[in-house]
Image 1: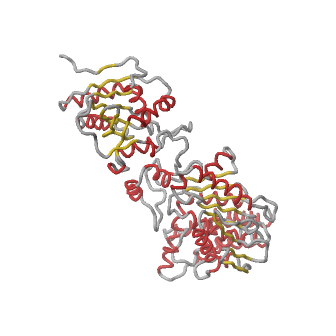
Image 2: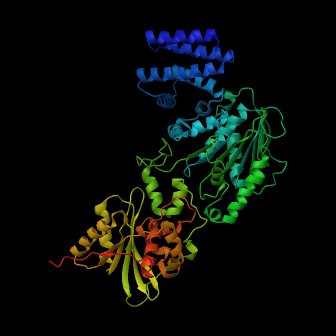
Image 3: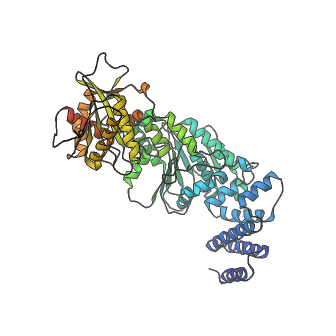
Amino acid sequence: MNSELNQLIDDCEKYISQNGIDENIIETYYNVCQLAKNESEIDTMLKCTARAKELIEKACMRDIGLSMWKIEKFVFNNKSSFDLLDKYYDVLLLEAQSKIVDSAFMYLEKKREPKERFYMPRRKQFLKMGLIEALQGMIDDKYDILCVSLIPGAGKTTIEKMFNALVAGWFPNDFCLFYSHSGDITRMYYDGVYDIVTNADEYAWNEIFPNLTVTSTNAKLEQFNIGKYKPFPSVQCTSVGSKNAGKVRASKFLLVDDMIGGIEEALNPMVLDKLWDKYAVDARQRKIQDTDGHNCKEIHIATRWSVHDVIGRIQNMYAGNKRVKTIAVPDVDPVTGESNFDYEYSGFTKEFFADQQLLMDEISYRCLYKQEPIEREGLLFPDDKIRRYLNLPHGEPEIITAQCDTKGKGTDYFVLPVLQKHGEDYYCIDCVCDNTADYEEQYRNAAGVLVNNKVQECEFERNAGGDRVAMEVNKRVESVGWICNITDTPTETNKEARIFQCSNWILQHIIFKDASLYKPNEPYGVMMSLLKQYSVSGKKQLDDVPDVFSNFALRMTKGNRIKKTVIMSSPI
């Protein structure tokens, strides 16, 4: 560090320790920032700008009791001005011109009405989820690949547009390529980035990059160039299936956005393989080194429908590689239950997510809103092989029976399906399926479904305290005057092997309600979703539903029978 700059900074800190924060020291720190910039001491300048912002923020909070964002909204609403706010933006400009992502996002929209801005109303959440740190890491060569999956409407592509516009200014000798599944998406992206760069009424891009302008455009090819001529334009867009050989290249960033168009494609392994080939053989081959000799970096943004999508395969290929960063944020915080996307404007509340979950099947919701893509290969119980019924057969069933898998710890489910036997088939007519940790609620729900369906026999899995649960349920069943032959039996065989062993019998002999007869968020709907998404992938997953049906299959075929306890009423 320059010795003169070092002395000035020390003098500023001594002044603060003796006199506190005032406008004089803020002005002095700002001048030190400018001096450091003029002497190309960028690291020193950034330390000074960070400190200057901190001093301004503290002074405003002390004297006015408002954050800079609240002050800015007040100034805009009253069409007034505020000197410290102007000084704050002067400091942000220095950082924006020095490739500080957060400051550049803030400065880029300084002209816009606060309610119309994209970044500031979302900044708190973006910082919390680590998205801004990850983008900064891409600029600082900390990461080579960044994978981002957020909920629909979170602003993934918009933040990418802003980032691309800034990258085009920061690296005017290089070029980026945006790659997506649809020509409509690429056109919207092109228009958005172009607007950020050229619309001086709305954006301050030309203030961050005063010496740069758009020098050529080709709206048909969705390309435009910034600065001097180069072999490929600064911003290029193309879609899956386009003829890209020789037409597009990426030297700084390859931006891959939602290569899967929807759930139909995600359900088709052949389509997933084809899209991977499009990425690996087409999109990725567009990469060349940048003007500094560094390899082109990649940013992937997607709704995660399948573990076999592009992001999933990249994660498998680069497992353990610290230069590959993943950001995946679910709808709500699993600890607090609060929304992770409760933006100041146009946000999403936890009530919104609860309402969405009511309308969607469990698999789609977990993909879209939980960032939990489904393992669709190796499904033991695919929807097209599950037998369904709209109406039960005529006549009385031979027996009404039930099977129970009791809840262990954590996310395990308490599952109790009720089945009617007609000939060789078992019709699943009702169930309990939830993951509540309230034991009393478990007992009450189980007893209720047994009594309401006039169940004659029910077997409980003894493991994980199932014998105690069976006894408690039996008490409640008898207390309302119904008698059910309740037993408990230990299971000792390997769970995964048992499920696989019994899967064909389940598909051949158990008939489930037609999907029109239940809602996705009802216990029956939850049970069916958990059954359909079970896979032989070997990865940890929720297996309580297929497990309870495998135990039922063994009981019905008289397999795996070992010592059984029968719970009977006392004769006294």
